[in-house]
Amino acid sequence: TEAEQFGWSFVLSSFLPKAEMLEEGDRDPEAEHWVTVDGAYWRRPEGPSSTYKYRENHPVVHVSHRDAAEYCEWVGKRLPGEREYEAAARAGHWGPKNRTLFSWGEEDTWDVASKYANLWGNGSFPWENKAEDGWRGTSPVKHFPPNSMGFYDMTGNVWEWMRGGKHKKRIVRGASYVDSLDGSFNHAATLGARSTLHATTTTGNVGFRCARSAKRRTEYDWVYHDEERHGQLAIEDEFGKRDMIPQRGWEDQFSIDDDYFDNEDDEFDGKPVKKRKKKVKRKRTTVSSEL
Image (cartoon, rainbow, N blue to C red; front, top):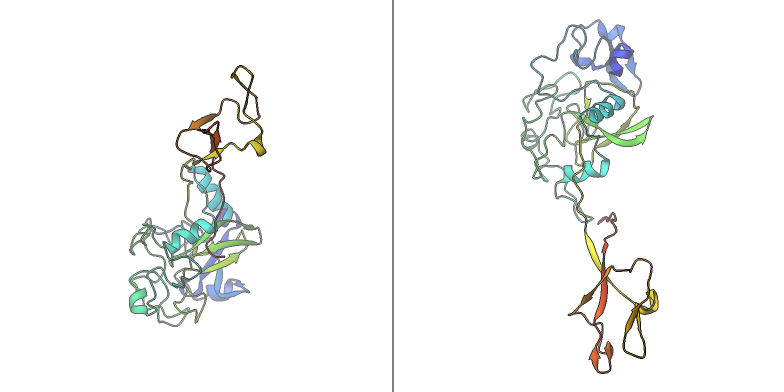
């Protein structure tokens, strides 16, 4: 990982194993409570004296955007796109008239939130975490209940890298265990929680999840032949023989619809004219309900 190559990573100040590390390590100028610790990486989340043992079911941390993307590719998957993540996180709570703030509903009390997400809680950040949700740091992935679509930890625990963005501003979604319910410190852990980080950033509260595209279903529409638009399909000679006229896209691809007639004028010599149609793939479009 890049943290191993760099030789250091960011650790929350209250998680440092030794007090003198506060003075020895550098601080993130935009997040003063995060301190650089030499030797910190995913196997040693708080530095050389720590271990990931007994945390095998927790989300991996101290991984950069490249680390996450390359791992996903290695297992035959990819990082999720932001629209995919949004849909999965909201799990039905979407639309221009929907103002649901949290994955569990509208309840904004910590007594309710502590049963659904790993957040900081009522303690003073960063030194007082009362572990009201059962955890001071990361928690096992399936510790809290999933949303209605079956996804775990869409809010809280760790920020998650998204596909896309620019190198200096890669997107993360979901908030983490250092964030608050109401945004009084750090980020508000709502369904819209979003931030950007430099792609090389590695910290103890940023991880990722893998995604894979489902097999897309091919949908079809019927297109009816219009002589004004497509020209004649056939002409009839003096002996009543109909000769086909080749037309691009319609050669041997149309069928007869016995039931469909556009209007009462679709007749020839008092007999109904059967409409010709062909099967075409439906154009795939992205439809938004926000506008």
